[in-house]
Length: 379
Image 1 (cartoon, one colour):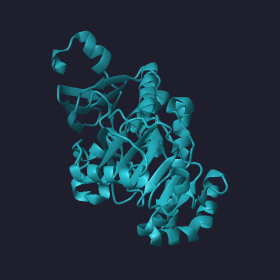
Image 2: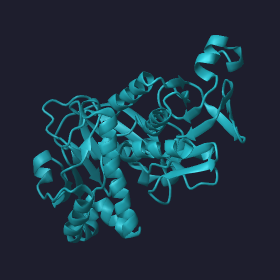
Image 3: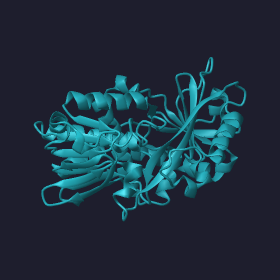
């Protein structure tokens, strides 16, 4: 490969010379930051740099859930987190999803509002008891945010409806949906190009150093310079933020081959959200299992493990499709960014450098809003 200092004058001038704003990471946050930068500064030169030939993080590797708060998650959060913080997070997710729809468009997202279910087995009996008592409260608080009544309800016939095994009841959220994350990222890229934003793939930023009026970035192909830099690498952010509370969290996924006459529609959470599944193109996409090995899944290695893959396959066989023939078609994993709190890190770490990371597994919902805030910080 040619190093940066071996490029022609034309290449340097077109792509890398006089960069006003450089964004590290071509995911939801990175693209949203770049688009907002260009909106605020139409004549500026905005450059996105991504380490992979496609986005490396979770933006195009996630399950495609357009969710803002399942009942069991919210009840669990309320037992650990101040009430004000819980509902501020829900409000941010709700507004973020509205913003994503505005940027990308419902059709380009392939957005389908089929609702979501928290599935309850005997193992979650205590959680079910607590959640039932909170349904009216959840509906009241969510109405104050969304203006929508009776979002949450109990659905005791979910197994009868979809053919699940060992599921006793469920909690239904009628407003949650699902998207096609591949189409979403593709549209983000199209919008960036249309706005004159430059995108360079396959270049990894190894380190950066900021001075009063310039940021110097050391890459795998040599040196880049920019006036201001936004770090939007989420699960890979520890490299640049060693002292911040952000850790990688790997999520493993399997997907079946198409299943004839598949009736399942919607998104589903199982065992307090540690497992999740949905339909896509007449297939079942199932991910999760990180709770089986938190330490092992705190990694940026994009790989699968026998322990979690076997658990996913067992869940598919015994609970989700107990009476249906199917074949596993493909497996993959994505890297999220998590921490002790569910609030993202949006801050300046230098007058010329800002970060927008730690989406907490909710990048689809909040990523576009985080990007806007990062751009405003640097403007």
